[in-house]
Image 1 (cartoon, rainbow, N blue to C red):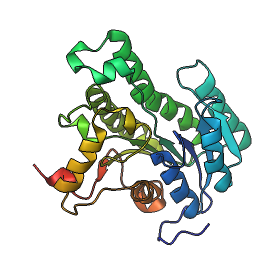
Image 2 (cartoon, one colour; image 1 turned 90 degrees about the vertical axis):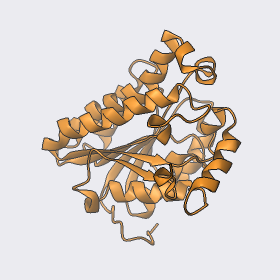
Image 3 (tube, rainbow, N blue to C red; image 1 turned 180 degrees about the vertical axis):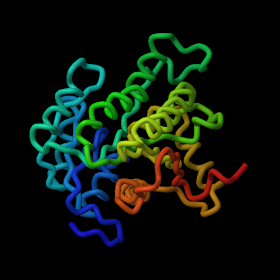
Length: 259
């Protein structure tokens, strides 16, 4: 597949973590990576999710599709070990996973359980740090680490609840990762899309109302989609973004400038 954009990823290899189905943000990014010339490996959560993930990866010529539930000890490490064996190196990584138990997500932040808070932080934030650590030895020539956040990290968004503090922690983790791995020419950035109707987002109460409010408030009066996110992701892992690191970059039709 050839990209219609100037982003060139020919010869680059990347790992995409978080494809849930064809409509997920990670799927949009994976398509953009391949369209720009990259080869990708991908992960799937479990056997139940595999029928939704495999059609996406097969269409993209993905030859490495690996099980990865970061809650299961050893699975993440095994995925990186396989990449090390098959490829020996890695140019970029997309971390696009998040989770919070429903009871903790739908309640007040001050009421969240310690266990729910810990699990949300582990899956949604600490897993990015684990991936960065595992990717580091595979990025001997430098590389790019990406994750996905949301402006609920900075401002209170109705019904976003526990994920607000969790995404704030993720954004801070990106900045520290960028500083610590920068001397090795490994960059770290986060993409902050506006609300997108994905399966993960459906777990947020009153999400349709949030979508409508976003479209009304954004200067362009339009919602972003996974292709918009993918275009930015492909640029950020390209050599054209080699001096961009430690940043949280919105792609939201300008909504972030509106008070």
